[in-house]
Length: 532
Image (cartoon, rainbow, N blue to C red):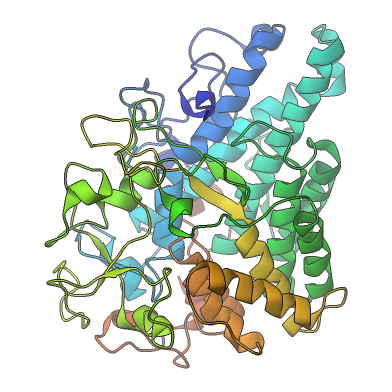
């Protein structure tokens, strides 16, 4: 049975960052004491509080605020934007998917059209939302890490099996912090650096350069790979060694972008660690994204968990299902009470499936929809794309929320299919320790699972398209396009790239997002990214 404790708001020890959006990540908000009556001195003396405190870090990925299970986006963790609208995963989708060929959105909220048009600036509220979500998770992680050192655990009388578990939890907090710093490095490049030992009460945090941040994230993940629970031995939805290996593989696959030095051999090494840890592909592709995708799922390495009755957010998979339904699409077939008429895809993405029309990964709704996007704000312009459903694969029943508002489907952060594709690309790029025939076998296992045609050979360029076919809407596309030099350039165009119907190349500086203007003002140590 799915364990949902991680994303119920357990208020003991939670850190409130309510004004962080306006104040900036370099302010004292990052080290606020818990706001609900317990200081860390009292909180960490009782081991019963450790799991709720750790849960707050995980919850920072899943839901938007300090509310109860009836309104998990209420009393938002960051100010200046609605809690559900600013949800971590929802804004990762905005940065990584809406900016690419994989999706457009019909809504005209201030700053939102700028994402697909690639015209964002340092005052864009969606860019600011993910920036402050990232640093919210980092801040709460720092608080937990600071209070679970060997010295603190000894002082607080944590012993025996509780001590063992506390050390595992500390490793999880370090992993979650490293993961958010990875997102900061990927999206923003050079950012403020705050750890559990940083004094930001008296001095604004320093700026860390992207290449140095790479080293930090790498060192933290290597430590976590030693200190976390063994692969497949932790509770569902909690990080283990394989999660650290997966993020290391992703880090190394993109190392040349981040540091100027390729690390494909290291990518293969950590892919092999995951592959040899006992994971296997789920037999049905669509079942990976349905309301009961937690059941018998040997493929997912780490997920963000949702439950329509206890994690009621307007981000996460609720957004992924509702926003993708509109036009003549029957909402009941998606397990919801109605669509929001927002997300569709472009013909460039549709064309990736032209040679294999039976591929289940190209699941388009075309009735009443136009392939051409003449007007982004018109939902029927652009094929609808079906990825997530609030329907159980096992029996066709809708999710647990009887109202049809909130969705049960969990969102995978890392899964074996991604590892297979990273392995194959790293081999094709010259990394050692892998095998081309093995890589081809992994690719064809994915294509066979999806009902597509197998291929006789693969090369580096093949993997960019195959990753989009397999990993669409899973927040990897922007990073992949940048790695291939196709995100900003005119070498690959898609509808409305650069704000014109047929697409155009844009400035290369848009490979990074701007540091939010408020943080530039608040922290004199920061330097705005070029072009902004």
